[in-house]
Length: 350
Image 1 (tube, rainbow, N blue to C red):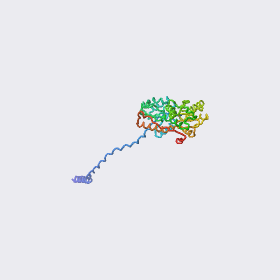
Image 2 (cartoon, rainbow, N blue to C red):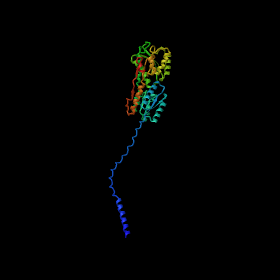
Image 3 (spheres, rainbow, N blue to C red):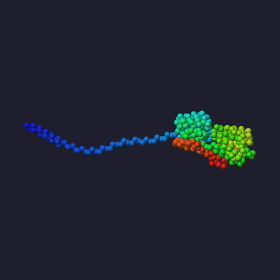
Image 4 (spheres, helix red, strand yellow):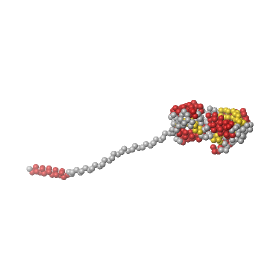
């Protein structure tokens, strides 16, 4: 009995100790409000891609033409300065070769073309080609007809009015003391050293230089007209042959450009003649070499054919086309003015 009571007492003590050791659970802390879901971090903004350079193909009829050398250098400098990717090619005075160059540019996917045609008569074919490809195109230096250009509204011509250059040549002669009639026989006897007669510039300079004299009431006599292809050596040879044939009868030497005029000057001096004393000599372009000769009194004058001005306008017109501008029929020729250059104003152009 005693053992039973002792055992029961031990059990009661264990239960009491256990009860004392256990504490009621603390009330649960209120749940913290859920944090708002984090919004997705914005994607890192990508830097805008650099604008792709637009490409321009430039076709020059031949690189060794003195005027077009000045022109193409100015053109390339302006285009590259504006960030264009520029390729300039030499047609070597070969229209078939230039046609291939134009087709190559089209295949390469250039954004614009600037073309100085080898032959003005090829303009219609060139225009059809660029129109089919849908490439904005500026023609320079050799002007197509308005009808040829009208078939493509994304095309423009930039140059100068060639008739004006011829007129100014004639006026340079009329401004001399004798108005070109050095021997006083009432007739201005002249030779004409022509560029490429297929070129409209050569045609108009040849016609209008003489027309200016006739319109002023002067009688004229053409002693000879010879094709010189814009070339200095040919100008020298032609003038030498004409001086040998006609001698002192020649009073005026008209040259369609300065390079031929400088060649003619060499023959004039070799023949013992003196410009502005017993013969007159005029050119067109206002090349540096010609300006020097005008200043020295070895040329009667020249006519500024503003290569830099035309190159600048060609780029402006190209950018107009790239910007979506179109040109209506009769508004596709943009002219940069010619300027007469004489010993009195030559310093302004040097």
